[in-house]
Image (cartoon, rainbow, N blue to C red):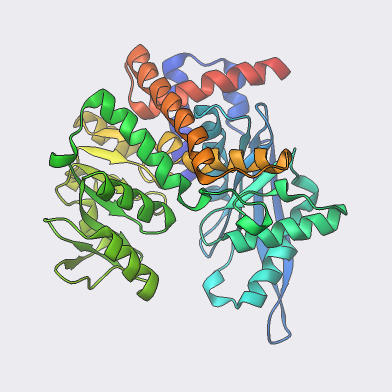
Length: 409
């Protein structure tokens, strides 16, 4: 099943449970706008290559469209539509005044030089400039896009509109209006959510082991935080494979190795494993923090974790979700668990709009209560409707979206 089909299945399940207004449901089945562009990129050898990009704007009833841009060879419209819809839900779950959007370019950026990557970023900005803006649609980093790329986007957009507009994108470098703490915000936010659930459900650090699939910014930070708070992180992996040690991994050392070598495998005093093996290890908490459709009908029966903390977008298919629920596995859904990233993007946007700059402490002082309140909202909604936490997160979001949509209908 495609990512978009998964997203629509999640919408239908929550809408049925809460008896969502028919007009709101139909409105949320479709994006407000799909933008597809073909744009040129100058290559270092003097040639020009034509690339294909997308920007999907799902719903702006609660505020400007908001969502990342990814550069990936498998990026397609189905994926971007799903991610755009999930962003609408995510922003409503944490109650920030944004709608959902997402964008991408079908390209392997690892094959491009820095000069070619800058050409790509600026050319794509020109192609979508008329549909983005600080009060219209605010892109951000995603898979294979960086703060440097966001700087190029903001700079190019400023040239187009004739004035600096740092709030047109978030996730920029600090020197160009980025927020303190943004690089670790997704992992930090996920840990705040886990803590809130742990207070309610009573998970003990000394007896709870953790396995983290995906070791980018979010995966590294959530692994570091679990390790710092006394949890035993027994396995991590990246795109090249993983490592496992039942006695626990030295996460700070592993982060150093990743920075130096680009991989986590071949760590002393641990055994190498595949990404697939990591998903089936006996552990208390499994943290998928890579790409969509990681837990599927094909592998879910081998999952031995008691808790799945979704730091990636869409890592669990609806079939796998149902199977986990039947077995009593607690799934803390992506639209809540990884919303620390977009929440800190909102805080960056606020800083840019008011020409302020907050310290990391000030940023996280604002982030924590938002994640705590959102977690409490999901927990109480689950109790009220007797549904899973994913359905509860969707219901909470849909209640807020329904109010906004019907107000402007």
